[in-house]
Image 1 (cartoon, rainbow, N blue to C red):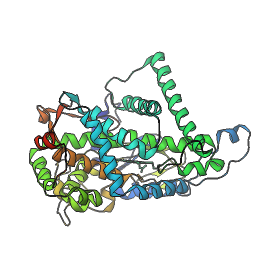
Image 2 (cartoon, protein in one colour; image 1 turned 120 degrees about the vertical axis):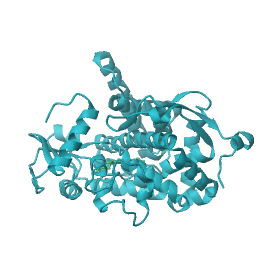
Image 3 (cartoon, rainbow, N blue to C red; image 1 turned 90 degrees about the horizontal axis):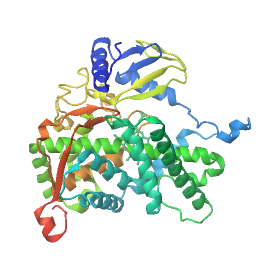
Image 4 (cartoon, helix red, strand yellow; image 1 turned 135 degrees about the vertical axis):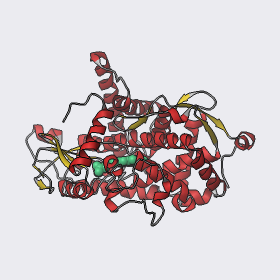
Length: 420
Ligand code: HEM
């Protein structure tokens, strides 16, 4: 393996090797690429089977065992909350929060990657951790922003001053989470229907450090992939006027209430557009995991302690599973399309069971809501959109992606952005 200097080269090398070597190959002595759908499914399932949360910090110090908490319990709690949150009314509130962020940036040239990030994080934060004061929200958002910048900026900050500032923000954000959990447990703050709330009841078993780690997992999850996916949606929308017009026609004929009740049923074309955007530009590009046991993957045996890489992107761009994988075509998701997915494991934008993304439905609905806003409320203008290049960092990131958002004429006139 050559030592690549840029993530783009690294990815390019991996793709070439995967095509030549069959999807499962050693990148170096301790790192196995698992880019073959069946092997990726198998290793995920086996590696996380029976996974329990690590011991509590305090118990490690005192050399005593912690109460065992299975990861499936954590996931069940998240999925139950998300199920309660998937109503038309909640989707309406999510869209209103997205609108507020976009309305605040009308009429001037803006960085569309930053916009995508702000729209997703600010609208999803109350789903993850509701009832924060404005000051608390700022600390949590700052922490998410700095973590993302480290992953996507061309030249992320370095040096002791930067590291100190980074750690200080992280500590403040962690303190906010602890304070909220403690205040809810003692009745000083109301309980909320968010993804943090189930862990208030589990605090005696989990302990504060494990509860913080669970909430941080969700915060990190909303801080990265949703914003990258939203940037990719804007990128495809700006570069494909034909699809933008088709989507606009769909939304003009779709009632807001129907859309909020069942987005994929009410706007199937938009759903395909989002699915295809996620196929082309799946974030994160690479997921690095450590093997907890020894697994025979046919082409290689992975031993406990060695690391492996999974990648939805590599599978989505592999000619063995997709016809013309580099061509953007939402119609490949029409039932029976000849260029559709070769099998169930070949479309995996949300990863693999039992660690598959718990926010898959919400994330998809949010991207569809973004498309609807672009079709009914805003006019997005991106000069020379076809010149915008996509760079590969932790996720695909459009480079120098700037444009303007304006209200559509009928919205400016009567203040509504509802289609139909
Ligand atoms: C389009 C948007 C999104 C994309 C592309 C995405 C993608 C992913 C991926 C690839 C994983 C890793 C799965 C694996 O390890 O196999 C993941 C995990 C996760 N995602 Fe998402 N995600 C999105 C939105 C969301 C949202 C909106 C939430 C929460 C409301 C969320 C919460 C999580 C959580 C909690 C995990 C960790 C699951 C676990 O460790 O068991 N995601 N996501």
